[in-house]
Image (cartoon, rainbow, N blue to C red; front, side):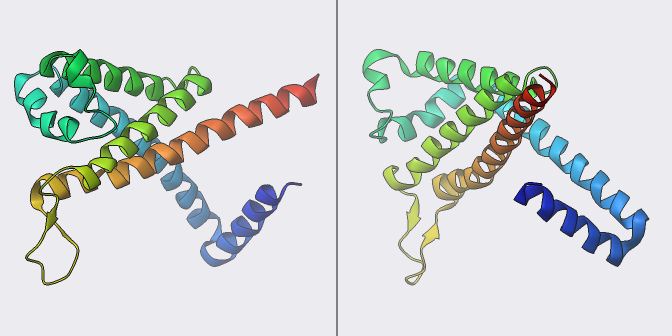
Length: 184
């Protein structure tokens, strides 16, 4: 028995003693619902934001982030503002579709969730490179401006969701591979 399996068994026994079988069933149901909510909420967010990248409004809206980023500023020497924004949109929608493909392919979902984590980490780097993120008038407290600071910091939660899904997808692949070896 692995340490993870032992830990789950012990946690199940403790929960079962405290809440009884009905509480345990409810807890498992809520956890399963939460997993699906995180996955498909992230898919919706990526499709929505990706679709917006095809508008002039969004292309101009992200241009200051891209132009001030050491990781991405090179893009405007190769692409126009609109075409780079569209390229990001295609990428975000493709990543969303890979994450949504989990019932069909854990491997595709793993690739999508890892790509999403990379995208959100890149977006969070804008907190360090975009002018106007930090408020100087907060009395010494490291306060974020509403825009762009608070607009960017929400990606901490999106990064966490992507990393969690990445772990779920990797676990599913590892479990599937282990079961295949066991049956052979």
